[in-house]
Length: 335
Image (cartoon, rainbow, N blue to C red; front, side, top):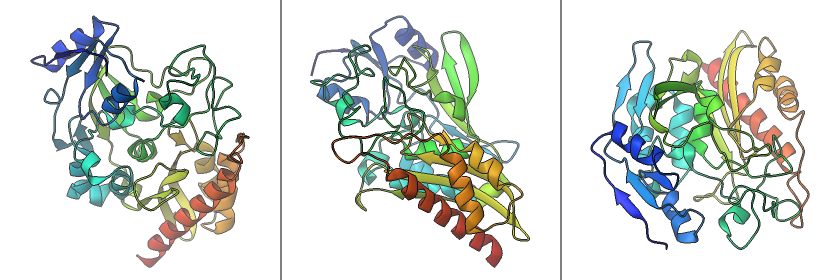
């Protein structure tokens, strides 16, 4: 591990300025991602600015019935909160599926959505990676692509975003509160992450020195019937091959409203707007759910690779979405 400086500013504003003033500075909170990258040589900051105690660790009720989740709230505490479990079960289910108990006790609300890809080539500093070293190439293309993107990829990067929590937040219309060198601003969660394009080194729209201070989840009545389903290679802690976060409102056998986000398929949590549009007003049937999956995957481009590629993700995601919506519709029927 390379040596680096360590700072503990007195407040969030000072922390933001400390990072903004140094191009080689990074924030440190739970450390569950950046510490791994320090060990691997993927991240080489000259300064780590500890913000662990500088943002709120509380979950507050908002006037509209939503919740404000402080950036320092631990994943384990968020998943256990009775308001989250009652109002947003999709979020309460996504969090335990995303990491081991030890990691959830350290990982924070502000840090979890900012974790970088778990692409094996990104984490191996001996291989070319445009995300790690812009312009060096993408070793994943034509390589081991089983875990890579089928939506929104580019010739420069086919990596996927690893966060389960982020997929749920994308489905819930969450809002990200950010403190930057120029002050406070709010970013819709679905606009936080970027597609790779020609600049895969940028994971989000955040500028250098921007600090997430909280995430707001608005009141969303249909979210009380929601679910997160993750398909992975093993039942224990593993990253998603595909995942679905869905909220569904069915009345008289017809889909009244729906929210869907997909994981394991793109460089960012993928809000499936086309699937939602296909479902609103449609019969609550497997045929409608399959049509919605087809709409969501219209632009899917599976990757070839020496490991067989990832075309299997298309039928796998279709089946996962259909079964998730079917179960949610069944819950509506029984109540």
